[in-house]
Length: 465
Figure 1 (cartoon, one colour):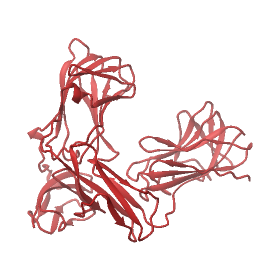
Figure 2 (cartoon, helix red, strand yellow):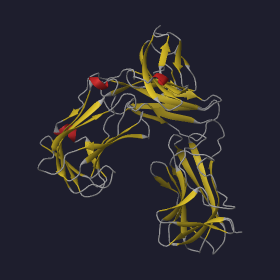
Figure 3 (tube, helix red, strand yellow):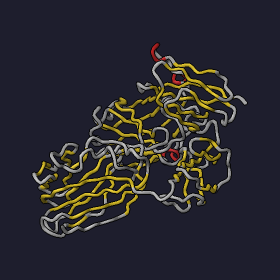
């Protein structure tokens, strides 16, 4: 068998030899795969997956979606493929968005050839799938599909941030040997934030040197840059031209700002308005709600608000927010709550979508004008302990506490996350009912509790000297 190997390097997201591909050999069936974008797939008697693409860009896709189960890193997608000489295929992964390898041209008729592509920096926290794409029309056969984490000669050192800025490694490598010096540099996203200190493997360190040099030990390590909000009461009401200009149109949206009014022209596509200038610190700034004053000159009647969850890639969507339609009576105010229980950390990339129904379908044509976008504090949604049903009663003791905080839960605990009052995550522990908080600074903290039934609640506690 003629074997042709194509290796390429593309910055993407993290995977492993994983739960994603539950069947890559196709010995007796093609379970775990489905046709996608019109791809017609079936099992072939030689023990392979057959993909018939009557036109270009038809795909076979692994199912169900799953998170990489070996953590973040570089992953190698490999498969055997045969078809007609001159036809083209490529491997793809989808993890929030699509990432593809370079196209590969079949070299010989009906001969197994090998495709290999390395996807770099795969995100362990986001579900994904693998796609086998026919770039050109034709009939293709696939076998021995694998998705394995790239071997690491040394230890993985990763740079993270709480959302108030960036954190970069001067010489990023897949792995670092013990004793290697790794330099991290933190940079605030804007003048609303100042670098505070480094968090090393979930523990605040008190180290404020920036840049910071970490010496690699015999273990994987995550180094996070923590930032402080410079103000406890910033102007978060976007109601002037200069402020509204910070909201940018995406996905075919045409946005103009004049006389303290933002005009959003919609042309039938699924457009969005995005804020990505400077992060928010909702806990520090007492933000838990949002109002939008508008005039709706379209027939659209629904809005979606999206914002990142805890500063990561996963988004929280507030769907089906009602907006009055047509130019005659479409003046109103949208009011949405942003609960502290989920909206924690310093956040950017806030997005607004306008829809023509509650199914998030495309928008209809027209002009949607915005007078203000006001983030504010609603006392009825304040940062307070969640009222729980009897079976979910949770208690903390002692409180105040100096070292060991115990958590009582009838259902058992899946995960505990501790946030300071700036919304910064300072500690995470799983499957435990106690926390050693001796290294935390004295002050008030928020404990987010995820129980085994996935019920989420928050509790406040005080750390003493």
